[in-house]
Image 1 (tube, rainbow, N blue to C red):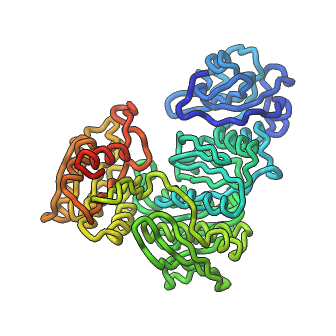
Image 2 (cartoon, rainbow, N blue to C red; image 1 turned 60 degrees about the horizontal axis):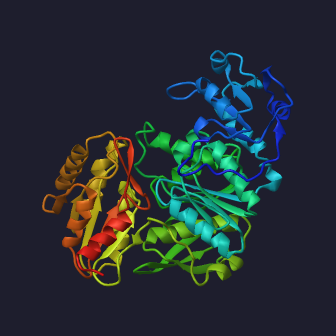
Image 3 (spheres, rainbow, N blue to C red; image 1 turned 90 degrees about the vertical axis):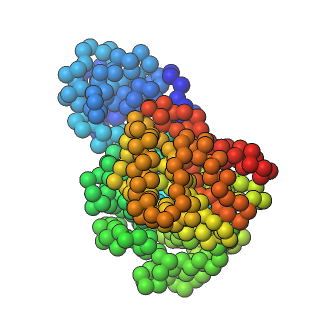
Length: 513
């Protein structure tokens, strides 16, 4: 098997299931082969395939998976499912072959069947979607579940957690085959509750099909991913799929973004609301009680008038909103306000990798590393940094290449208007010209605020050195974009890179020990 970095996560053992049983459940038409053959896994990609797998050969963007059947057989596939187009590509293969039209629409349910993820044996499942805050909410929710005594699992942009084991992520939301094998691995590890981050792309690509969530949450919607969706209405429609009966039993919607009310109207499951504004008349009201360096205190008032007080170890009123959403989700899942309050009275014990993460020593300037890469994320995070900074705020950022370019002017505008000094650098240029990306950002920033102090520095290794030379004690640097990531994508090559390490090295070299 070709080694995967990060790896595909599978359970250590699977009860074999015959292709005949799978065929009966899904009404598959047998084309050829022995129906007694048993499978112990499922894959749609030969890079992830293991001996004993059922290989689902599906149409892709560039080619049909049936063209990889020979490779799948070499790697140990014991049965094939494909559609009519795939069958036309196949010759005699020597293993059972079944016909299934539109196989992607059945992939999640097929994987759940192969891995034995039946509703009666599943842990509690929670999912969060939204443009910003879904990773943070997922981590906060998992921490609260752990403090409530659950054995927890998590899957997010940054990491997978399995009963304390931490594994680097491959996608924000895994493909449905990997998602189901991950859940099976969690069940094997006696996980009782799972927090899952769900992207719009994951919903559009059916990656969470085959799962029924106990409670789902919506954080917000703002300008992003318009390279994948025609407009904001289509982007909204993609996310609201999570709030349908096929995916979830109950939901919680945060009303604090412009699209909160529209999202609520499109949800077709029982749904409650949360907000930091009384004017929104939410079911759950979040009130920030203190914003301190490295700490945000808050209260959540429930529909019954109970007050839950706690704090999260990260700055920003938006983080209190994320915590309030998590609390509302827990109550909708059946946990009482009294029990939650007792569990988190001393604070939510969570670490959010790359989310306004303070990486500097106590002396000298504060340096925060953040994953935010949208105008709304910049707005909220800069406001949070400003609240806890006595001196200047410097913003350092770059924009993704080969991604939604329409948001770049707004990113630059938010960055320059929210900071005292702006340093523009590179992020993931991919196959786009990095200098052109920087030039567009600088131009938009100068239009928004002509008098601003703006620097253009490439590469990021030099940009952070320049940024630190411009600040001193009492000042703050917000380096937005890289967050937890350990690479930069330069012409398709993942170049090793750590914003945390670069910032700390630059601080040391500048004399801040």
